[in-house]
Length: 238
Image 1 (cartoon, rainbow, N blue to C red):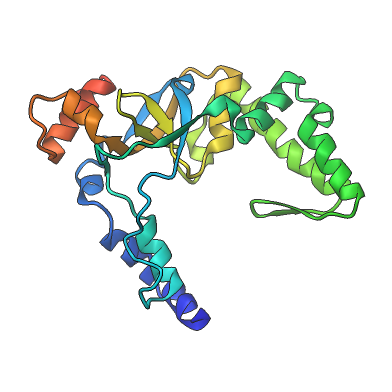
Image 2: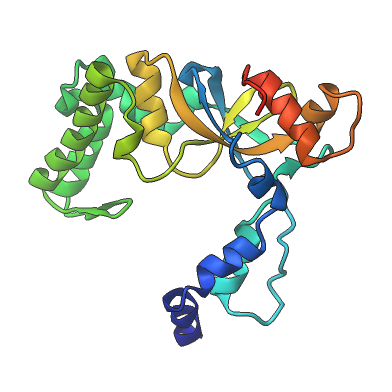
């Protein structure tokens, strides 16, 4: 099974599968999906929408394929689906970044630094994304990275050329902007605490109730979606 999973990845099948199961609305609307918003408009963090995976656990397929297919969600969030929302300022990533900012970038005074330093002194190895933190030197390097992020945001704004992925958002039932669970959490928090006015984001999903409330027709087409998205973000017709 492990060999088959590696084969999927090495032969580029993973990318082709992702494209195959992608909602065609993403392709039809791709020129509209990247917009600029005030980061402080994104007040909630959304998780765990549809509970039913497309491929059930008991279906005999490599786990790599199941993960790819089940990670694909339709562009329209169904009207009977209520996202689980949490205030972004309560989210641990925001509190981590905000604590550094509130302490005037003196990261050694933050609660997170003190807790992680205690863990290291007790012999623990800390994992953060791709980083392994084993020593105080590693810990300082980890925090300095976020200090530099905050400094750069404050002095130069949000530089989209320095990042590889988009900050993804949903449009909720009332047109509110919701942070998607995928990457960009630290960047969004940094933009919020440093007071940046506009940042680029990618619309990843739209709730059906919002869509229908902004159009006399509730027929889901790329043309109708294009109209309501343009109106929501004051975009020019193309």
